[in-house]
Image (cartoon, rainbow, N blue to C red; front, side):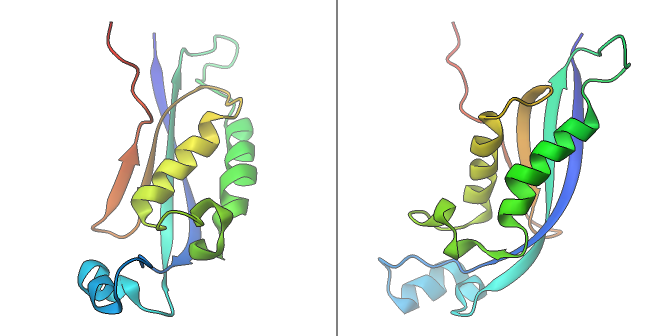
Length: 140
């Protein structure tokens, strides 16, 4: 039996959507107000979904404290109250929320999580959310 658990976290960060290979006009056309030279911020809601069997001794999929500790240390402490453009994580890619979602999945997929990582979802605004499930294994 496989059960899914989604844990929700909140962090705040700023970014500027800007491609240095485009002109200022092209950046404004592509990214609109998100290309503001001073950047802008979001209160991001991060959802981490893990899965696994229910552990008979606890009746749970995983130890929530262990999951929270890993996510806090590896993701929240890294991105909360940061300008994403200034972080090494985004030195070669534009810090869109799509790319942030992928980066969080890459970070967590390398850790010994207390359950199987299924997906990462980040809500940027009430109208925009992004989900990444990682690289899919080829079907046999």
